[in-house]
Length: 126
Image 1: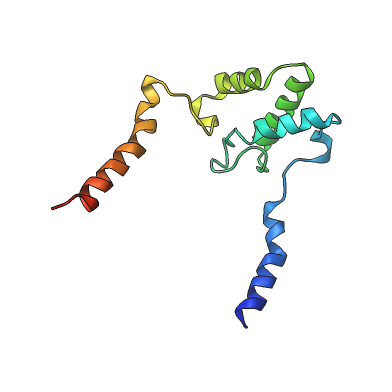
Image 2 (image 1 turned 60 degrees about the vertical axis):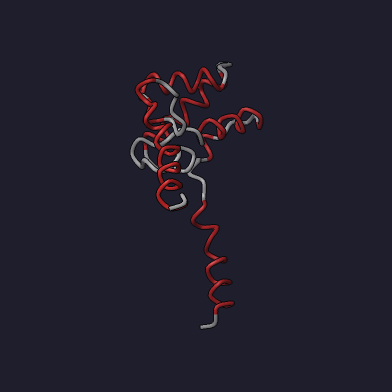
């Protein structure tokens, strides 16, 4: 099979893998609130799937969190208040971007240290 035909076949099926897990009963009628809910959902990691945000996860806990987010939005809470609520309930692991604190400093410093080490080992003059 030639490569052009393979690319066409693969691109035909590609959108199937990017389907949203949001169910119709979860969607808010107010488009602005729904957009905010999606933004918040993409910042939170699914506790079951681990490498998926709750916006794309099919897990029951992800669905529950999406519902909580939408309820909090309709109550008038801000994005930050909702993220803080979920962070306080589930800890740092639920956030894709954990806060910079003394106990998470290694997480933030290690990439820079590794880049420096890589540069030092491979690009320094001998």
